[in-house]
Amino acid sequence: MTTIPFRKMNGLGNEIAVVDLRQAKARPQAVVGALSAKAGLAFDQAMVLLPPKAQGTDAFVEIYNSDGSKAGACGNGTRCIADHVMAATGRDSAVFQTAGGLLVCHRNEDGSISVDMGAPRFEWHEIPLSERFADTRFIEFEVGPRGAPVMHSPAVVNVGNPHVVFFVNELEAIDLGRIGPMIEYHPMFPERVNVGVAEVVSPERLRLKVWERGAGLTKACGSAACAAAVSAARRRQTGRSVHVELPGGELHILWREDDDHIVMTGPVAHEYDDEVELDATPAGA
Image (cartoon, rainbow, N blue to C red; front, side, top):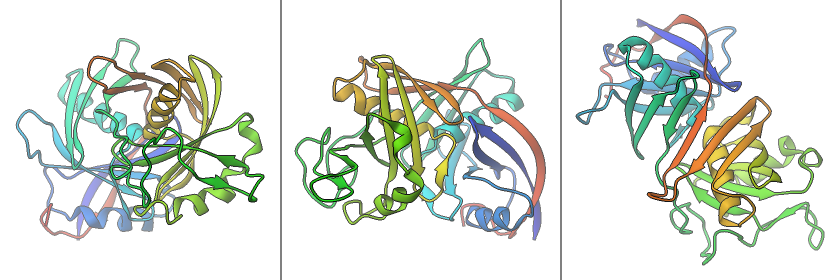
């Protein structure tokens, strides 16, 4: 066993554990088990930094949900690792490589961090779905009694991981803690899915609750905010620049017209530093 430091952070209450293995010899797959076994530690995602594989990047990043499953994207976690790296380098920018591509981050004058999350994908097989749909702005999917569904006709999008977004008139009327697991594991979504329920407040503002794949109800989810913002814009319910209110706070999402990339901006918080015991096997093995 070897002792590895980790940093406990959060993005709008989305609990993040940052483990930097760029200079350490340890299996990233052991991170979640070791963190889960640590008394008093609760986290939604673990962001594991590995030695960079591409020139000009600061790290290759693997993302783990609290249940041990891998995630393709975590917007709040990306802001946290950007803050971690920028604090160490003294720079106001950082670039990370993930299995889904590059994430370019920079710190703004107010201390917030912006992340270029890349371009969303909309084809049914890119989500992926188990059924073909020509228009993923509105898919045939209902939640609740037949003929009187509680929610229906959601949008679906992949922003590094799969999301389904339901739009409702009253956000508080939806018990997402009860119906979230049923949707996450529905056969329509062969890789499971992140579930967002959104209320359009104005053309510039959304309210959002999220059931995260592999983590459950969380106070905030950056990729879900991106998914909701893009979906609302595609349905012509908002513009391409919106503020998204989550239980943990607010994010700004810009869906750029020139390259279709999504830029997410929000705060981070450093809670404390600690250590965890990990299996001493070479990173990436």
